[in-house]
Length: 191
Image (cartoon, rainbow, N blue to C red; front, side, top):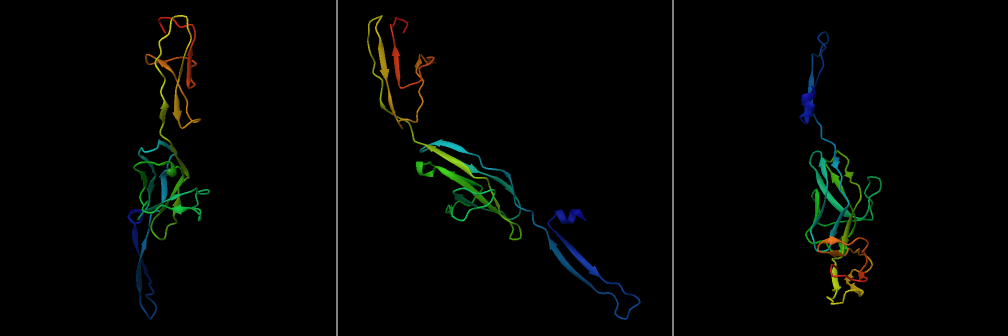
């Protein structure tokens, strides 16, 4: 019955019955083992992280006797590509980066294999985006000016060209001040 098959195996017995013939009945048995096919139930997700911080990519899969192998590169329509490098030691459902480095950035996918009779399944390709840590190379300088004057504050930070800025006064955003330079014109005591 279905309960036997869901349990993973079923014994099939074949019996002949020829009561009128000279040979009598014979029987034979065999075991049919059913293995669960590999199914990825949760695909990995694109992940962003700052350099030197931990990051991980993971999947959830079901099936019998699962094994995992992560690859750096891209897969094509759920199929592993042969020119991608498998990641040595990356043989679990989670690919862990204890301190992500810029070189770790790129595309990754996972091949999940099950019992030998079941076909392996390839996950979607996802991207690990590793951003360089932001460092301020030139701090803005404190200034003293008279009321009615103009004053400019400038900051320099790395990586140049990839940053956005937001100037604040007493913790509140200053509307429209989103470059590395803040200019206040005709300052008053409230500034």
